[in-house]
Image (tube, rainbow, N blue to C red):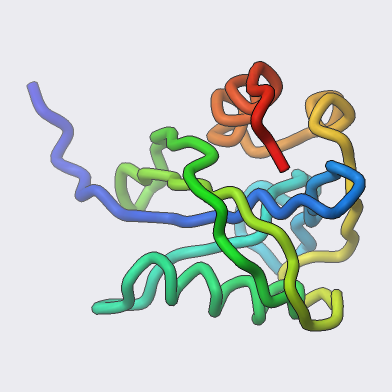
Length: 139
């Protein structure tokens, strides 16, 4: 029997700094789910918005950064009450802006991927993080 929930898209950026650390944000109590979990910045595209535009907008809104996208970090799928979510993550590097947090997050950190693996992260990020830890071509 097929799942009747619709598929929806979410996009996140794995932003690496010059020291090969990635930016993660901690979800604040302003969120309805996953409070206290660490995540890469991103969100959901607005209707009719392409993924590149959506992710750039989400980065500006959530952390104030401008980035260049470098390629695919990975993808995963998870269930939410509203639907089956496809999570697409892109590799990125900051090119401008000033790091600041929106109300959706209460902390940020620049962490090596191995250290991120020791923190509470979104379940949907785990398979992508596992793949990233095995890669040798990261920025």
